[in-house]
Image 1 (tube, rainbow, N blue to C red):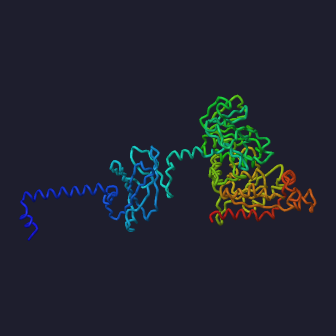
Image 2 (cartoon, rainbow, N blue to C red):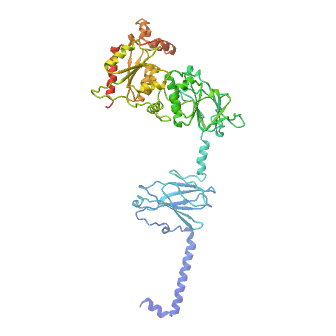
Image 3 (cartoon, helix red, strand yellow):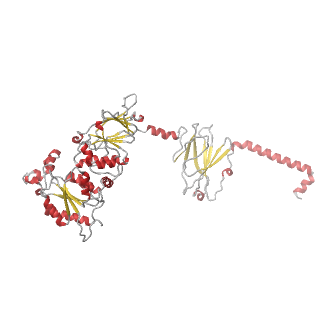
Length: 567
């Protein structure tokens, strides 16, 4: 007999209905009692955190409270990845100084699902209010919690932080505040001292003082209170520096030092340098002043004011073309401004220098000698960027400039040299460098090769076109100077370099000393490293009797180099 037939026979329809309601109420009571008793042991049901996978791996952030009274937050993040990620920690700092640590765990145990992770999604649950908030998050370290908190979130691949660790934006500010301030002046360079002074700067010519008036310069971490600077880029040479005016660089502090008031305000930065030292010698003009000035001023693109101490009007006139291309403003003879206090937004005292007549591209401003030569061509409107390119059977003659000298290390018979050079196939020009830099620059630029005895006149090789040939005649005992000042620098200028070392008979010293004299046989033993003895004998006391027959192969090699331009 079926269950329904027995039930119908034992109870009336009304009684059956009452019995059903009673059973339903009883079941509800039992369920509520079960929930009440076991609630503390129940966690969130897994079904609540299920997402439609569709090949997407799931990851869950399970929270741990750092304090028993603090809120718990659960963040479910889904991120794209191509491999199983390492555990991450996200520490969040709240306005009430609560640090919550979140440990990342993978929700799925299927390695195939964990292989691909999509764009992350964040769910923030507050267990106090049973409120769930959803937000989408672009790939990256930022996590958005809610508008009532002001967290700074930092992702670290490290061990969990202590509750005493407070990671927020104030940390980076504190690090910047405690970081040791760079000194105003760099005095570690072996060739030059340079002070780069930011903020309001006042230049007081009467006291030869540069005041760093900016408030942040009032106190220095290294205890330095001032510097004495001679703004000439040859600081180890006592002879050169003896004629360079000394300036004081002083970080001023309000209430401790009286700062002179500005009488002239400038809107552009300034560079203070000296035109003293060895200025007037063409090599030192370029190596000690012009090239360092280019390195220091070029980044300003003309928006810089030059302040020249040890001002020499003839020197400024000599290099006017270069100065005008580096600065839009006339240079100021700062030594004469005794009644003025010039104020600038920043000032550089001294000039940057890399090496003798060289630029190191790895050092600021990361330029090259080729860039410098392009700058010079622009400054003097030079037409040629490349030397002649001779072909086989070419009837054209490359132009050779012979640099003559009147006083020392001069050619005793330049006419013979001219005739021989013409005979091998050159068009020949003879000239001596003078104060008219623009005119001589144009002459150099018109030539394909240049030759001369080691001396300042060879400095004009900076105006030669690319791939031109430089022939340096090396006098007796002049090997090191010739190589250092012109041989090595020429390679950075994209020039072809040849040198010809004269023999003892080609030096006029052979007419002054016996053949077995130490001056001729062993110059090093003679001068023993003493500059004055070396200069007096081998630089100032020697001329060159060039043996044109011996020299002829060198000129033929120069012609060959001009034929090899296209190779």
